[in-house]
Image (cartoon, rainbow, N blue to C red; front, side, top):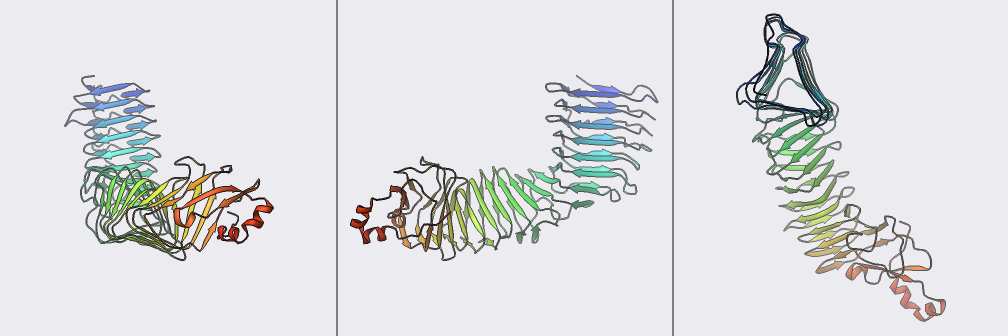
Length: 462
């Protein structure tokens, strides 16, 4: 389609472009004007149910209802896979134009390299709903600053490709409710209140996508704050500044990323690193109630880590630290199940609880803890069964280290039935647990004190 122009005369109205259904595509390399004349009303651009409208001209944007008093115009992008791309969209922005609406939802995506401009007077509407993505390269403006307009991101993702975007107007403040504000490919993004005219409510997410924030002061991610979740995705993502704190209701998600937190970092909430590498440039502070989970990921600790009592650390992946890790809290290798390895020393203190899960005897079917340096044992070990039917001869190699010292205070194991018994004789020295047969009474007499030495740990219900 080389061009689209639907002026239709001085007062012509109800001009329409519709792209609907998977595989339906309009590609336009020239200009798009739908109802560009005086009093041209009820003009529509609809991209629905997986359709694509691709406006490829580098300068000309999409104009819907461009004439004076051209009111009640609509752009709607809705349905999973629906896509509209253009340099910009102007929707009923000429003098006297009112009632214009931009709606995106249900998995629809709009990508603009420049601006989205909606309405010139009151009663214009901007609405994003769950699953929607709007990417803007410059500014988002709905009506004049003196007029009230509906301006809502309810669960969608409003994404900027510029460090200091403009969002207006000041009367019809953009309400972000359970939504996401994101920066993609941006250096020194203005995330700490520099974007004016946004009011936050509910649980909102700040996303840095291959981006960094501005080198600003301390920031709190927590429930009741502008953002309760921080996401860091894709390569080269950086958080800088004085400090980053996750409150008790705050969360950090790092995924598919080589991410770095260069500021002081305090975790009172939840950290999850998935298929990525999170580097902490300063020694993090983990407070009681905090959790830190790796999912096939790496955590690089420039200055080590202390896991306090009532905090938890675990998952599958690798912890890289020349200083080592000290645990007073809960250490849980695996993701039902999995392996967690440490490049240096690991010390489990008296209050430590080491949790290991078993789902089978094959490699990868039970948790493993690997320590490349010194493994200082201490505290309690809890072994839990994820549904495996134990049999005679089952053996589980739960931890390995080239150097071991200390001793566990307690070992809590799953119940066995059918005349089976846990053999714990090699657990302290090699991390091995085996399932053996309960000896016959005559053998018990012969074993005497030897059996008592073998069962050095108490067996409890898991």
